[in-house]
Length: 352
Image (cartoon, rainbow, N blue to C red; front, side, top):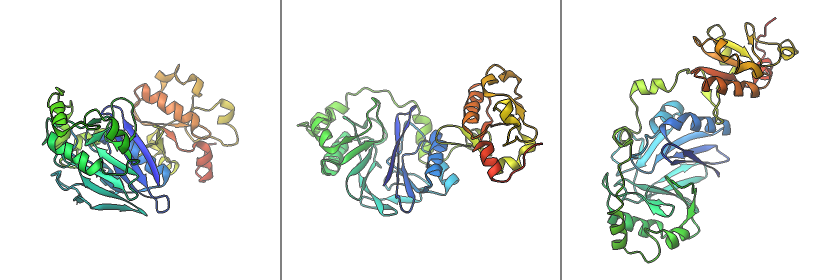
């Protein structure tokens, strides 16, 4: 199985990618709206086909990327049957399975943080994705959104702590840099739920947390009840240049064939050295030469009235240049994917 653990710094949310190596079919657990370009780039670079996005619950601290990924990649949205979300493609009851290639995730109803909280265990019971029901040395809050400390205690003890002790626990969040745990560790060391702690101990603990409500709750809850469907103007604001796409490394890139169709509409900025500009690979017609070493000093001379495509030999220097331009406030500055090497390999025209 292909497995990646991804992180959203703003909400401290973990997103999990699981995929079958043979069929390249994938599922994505708890995607974050703002991280959709990152997730889509990783899927693209690994050659994976996203079958499902999977929600562990209706989140209060971030907006899910489920609907956006469905629009972009054709994936289906899956969530627990008790979440009450509108527009999901599959509402999962306890025991339902999501199959991807030779692998599967089985839904385990674990209410308490919210009514619709659902954990997901792999077919070999070696990994469990617990959302906010069970965190590393902690547990999800029970003071809003149908929270019930009694339910949560029973969910964890009866549904999660009965999994194999060696099963890896992957939570929905962590605020202290911890990435994973095991069922055995949480049974022994979880200060809210482990050891000899009773249901009464847990309820008393949770009733006295005194935490403020999540800062994004007023935006996140209504959006997540629609699978993360945003307002149209918000969606449009996230794509200032539809022709380009961001790589998993975070660089905005444009495909050579797409650029060939838009040459008249962009500013071409070649960041190689002068000898390379007139060397064997040639250069694009109309490109301006501005070597990377001079870019920061001369950045104010670069027009901002149209998209900028940065070109180099292989795409390495142009990637750095695109990031420099973006940091300087250029909203549409992309690196030519693969540089002049890729451009020439495709037989696309060069300047005289």
